[in-house]
Image 1 (cartoon, helix red, strand yellow):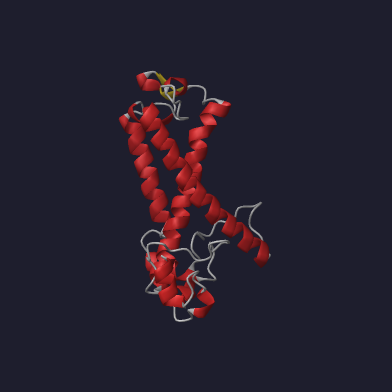
Image 2 (cartoon, one colour; image 1 turned 60 degrees about the horizontal axis):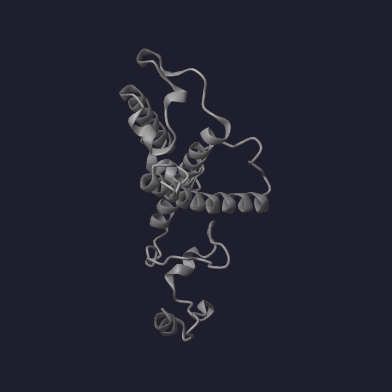
Length: 198
């Protein structure tokens, strides 16, 4: 790594101020570029400097981050506050309380429940691409902006909005790691919280 940095920048510690020809400079002022790493692309996915590909990846990152934040909270919430009262499937006599936490719940959800989940996921995906007019909506919107302004989070203050969007990206990155860790613990130990005594 230091040989590579030294070769590119003339400094073993990678003084990027000396390497002005880098195509990565095209993205160093984008949202999600945070201290102390700055623009961090260890796999070199954006080394060609293609802004369209970078934007498409940023849209994916924000979408997956949002899903991971919801999934992480969905993993934690039933343990903290309990489950819904009533039936998940009245025809099968399956109560919400009968569904276990974590990965064990996958086998308990009825087929029509999975069909509903898949239809909703397809609808959410299609609505994010403006129902087929992806190129038009993709070129006009900022990554992650689907036209809905959350009442307590949206602000006309540009500096505050940038701070909040950077926080969303950072929290999404953390949530992606968190939910994968929870899945791993659950799969390994059979407990969503990784009960290593098992």
